[in-house]
Amino acid sequence: MRIDLPHGYWNPKIELMPKDRLRQLQLKRLQEAIRYAWKNSPFYRNLMARHSVAPDDFLTLEDFFRKFPITCREDLDRDQLENPPFGTRMAISMEKALRYHATSGTTGKPAVRAFDTERDWIWGADAWAASLYNFGVRPSDVVMIAFGYGSFIGFWGAHYAFEKIGCRVHPTGSMDTKTRIQMILDLGITVLCCTPSYAIRMLHVANEEGIDLAAGSQLSMVVVAGEPGASISSTREIIEKGFDAHLGDFMGTTETAGMIASTCSRRSGGLHINEDRYLTEVVDPNSLEPVGYGKRGMMVVTPLIKEAMPLLRYATNDIVIMERGDFCSCGRTLDLLMGGILGRYDDMVKVRGVQLTPQMIEEIVRGFPEVEEFFTTVEDRDGLDTLLIKFELKEGKNPALAEQVARDIKEHAKKSLGLSPEVSVEPHNSLPRFELKARRFKDLRVKAN
Image (tube, rainbow, N blue to C red):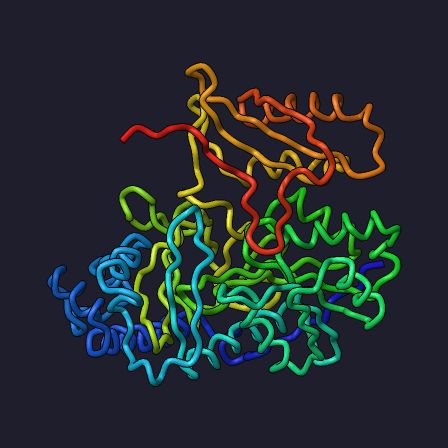
């Protein structure tokens, strides 16, 4: 039976700070960050000069939201292409650069290269530590990090944060899934840290090996990041039930080099923002005007403590809804992202007039327990946009179920989306598997130039 997680505060001075004082802290740090970027980062000095703004123009947070230009991913891409290999955002000498990371090439774009200084890394690990501790991780926990430890920032920060809390950490690098499952059983692992896709993959492999991780392991928490699966109710149910553990959603980006928001253990579906470190806005993706609390929009984030490569008003393209955190039952005054990351605007496609995101398809398909893996494409079939969903049955399931499941998925999609897809059953282990960010959705239509 799933145990209740401990409740507490990593940094109560910040987490319980009255909102007006928190805003004052954010403004102080923001003004310092703008002055620092102006002085040390050619990218931001040139950006401010082009928009006729200077550090002294920002006396309030509202001044910043109203006057400072938004930085887009395309701006970073262009800067690095025109000024290879690292662009002009760097605010330090290469001698002070401590760690290198690159994005995983989200939505097919080239990787953004990023550096951290020692101070960046300490602050980043502390942001992770605050988020993990607030979720329920304690020094007595034994942690497995199922992550390949490449240049993608992934769970690097989590590793150091678990150590900072005092946990025993078992990094598993390039180990295969069967070995990791056996380690969970043999070493008394209590916290598993991976992507949602890989958590589900571990459950499938365990089932094939005749292992019941819910009954046979000591896991109490699964910490996931890297993709929005934990905010999808059907995916969340699979992971929590399969491990009999609490699922925590943790979100950050390589560009910001830290943990922006994480699951509140008392507020279902809410992720508290680390507001002392990140100034977060939600704007309309087209007008870039603020939408306010409770409305869907694009997240724009400013790391308030970033030394190597400053980042100001960065448009993440993530779809979010922000809620004021004054009265959260956990006691924290930090604002929340309700439902986590709801999707990405650059993943959104239109099929026969219907706006779709990969998360909408996953919500439907993961609702069928007979399905092990799936893959979705949008294609041009005889001049007609067509949504195709391919899926595999779990090993050991009666093949006679396949056609019925296909019909049920098609019917559910038609009701939920107003769109009737083509659904096909694929041979077992024929579709891609993922350890890091899953790529289960491709738009294969030829786009007009």
